[in-house]
Each structure stands twice: as structure tokens, then as C-alpha cells.
Image 1 (cartoon, rainbow, N blue to C red):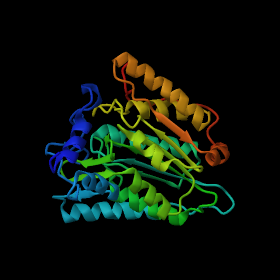
Image 2: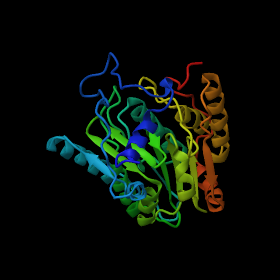
Image 3: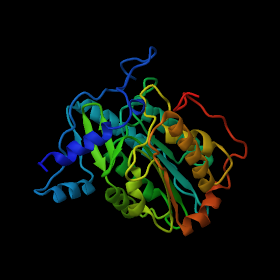
Image 4: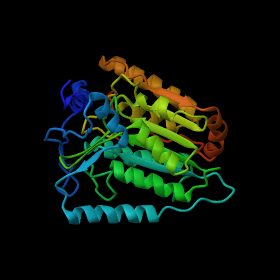
Length: 333
């Protein structure tokens, strides 16, 4: 393999899915220049380091991230947004198991921003996390009022939330939506932001923050690569796909990916436990993929014994009445 083969493979993995699953971001008739997300037009840069192919692949565990051509004023405005959003998060209540929700879109294709925004609301309601919910999402064709999602923003958010939580009783509920590859989640913002969040980097960030109790919901192709690294007694992890499979539905005009629609927009709006919601979502995804004649994505679920004990506690306050799905469905029925 030549020096650029890993990242070439990553970029190919991001693109090698049926046409329904991806498209160039489009602006809606109502969108303005301030809310129109930037398109991807340039080749993915080489983010790896090392002399051998093995060293270069291993280097992705460090979570490489590149920002280029970003005006200082824009960078500072984004920093202020993130600082304000983090400062607004409420501290935990001693003696009460609190859930903190982080929902992040790591790609500027607008479907991800729309999905992350609504996911933040659904998860906040389900886990009684009002005042303890942070959504990181860029412009989606309709709004641009949140801190943008990026690897660095997510890691800073995890570190900050760790200072607010009591690791003995509180829970982090993390939802990510983006493209992915077999080395991790892809961060891709227009032609100015690139990166890879590998399983090892996410695990290190959670460990360093002292966050032991975790609900991790990862929506991306190949996201099953996170399961063996992140699975633990006190972790519930749900992924959109197996480690060798693509996931679907990330059409720019959509409001949901297949997995996001099935799990967040439908199953988690029901008064059922997380494990049952994962089963319901898996069935929906399988039906939609069969209808579209896609190779099954095989969503993965791993819930540790400890997590099975505390999940009912944080889910005790979930809405008892189901709410209706919103937005354009991932697959027209």
C-alpha cells in the first residue's frame, strides 16, 4: 500500500454506499446564506502519520482533526457559542441520578444537523434532562443558532460535563450522527473541517472525564467498530451498523437517517425500555433496507449488567404517552 492508501480507503468508505444514502447538501427554497450548510467539494486530506501502514492506521486512535481556511472571527464566534452552551448546563442534584444528554452532528450534510437537533429534544424529554442537554449542530438549511459539531467541540463538552456529574450516580447519554469508516466516526464540515474520532479516542475522553455510566448511541456506517472498545458493565451502546456494514438514509433533503428515524424518531418516543426500543428500531431498519434492496446494516446493541440495573432508574420519568414522529421520514412509505 502507498502512503495515502489508508485515508483513500476512508474516503472511499464514506462514498461507497448506494445513491439513496448520500447526496451533496442542497439548500431549501426558504434557506438563506446564513443557514445553508457548506457542501463538500474538495478531496479529503491525509490526516494519518507514521512510516508504515500499521503506524498510520494506529495514528487515527489519536483523533486527528484539521481546520483550514476558517476566519478568526468565525472561529471566535463558534467558541463563544460553545462556551455559553456549556456554561448554561445545570449541575447535578446530589442523591438524584441525573442524565446529561449530548447530541452532535459531525458532518455538514444537513440531514445530520436536523437529526441531532431533534434527537437532543427527544432524549432530553425521555431522560428528564432539561437544563442538562447540549446539542452541537451546524446550519441545516433552516437554522444556525447552535455551536457546530466537531471532534474538538465534542471532547470539550465531554470534559465539561464530567465536571458537573457525580460519576457514582449520573449518566451521560451521547448521540452522534455522521458518516463513518472502519476506523471511526468521520468529522467533515464543508471544505474547512476534517477528522476521525476513533473508538480508542472516545473511550479515553470518557474515562478521563470520570464518566462511568454511559448510554452511547452512534449513528454512522461501520459504527459497530465502537462496540468491542466501549462495551463495559456500565455502558449501553447502540450502533447503526455492524463493524463491516454501511448504514443508510443520509440524503441531504431528509430529516432522518434510517437508524435515527427508527430509534430516535419512533422507538424512543414510546414508553418502553432502551433494550426494547433497540429491538423495535432494528426491525424497522431491516424492513426499510429490504424494501430498498440494500445490504442489511445490522445495528448492534450491547447493554452491560450494571447498565441494565440503572437504566430503569433514569427511564422512570420518561413520558408515559408516546409522541408522534416528526419530519420527513428516512424512507418514503
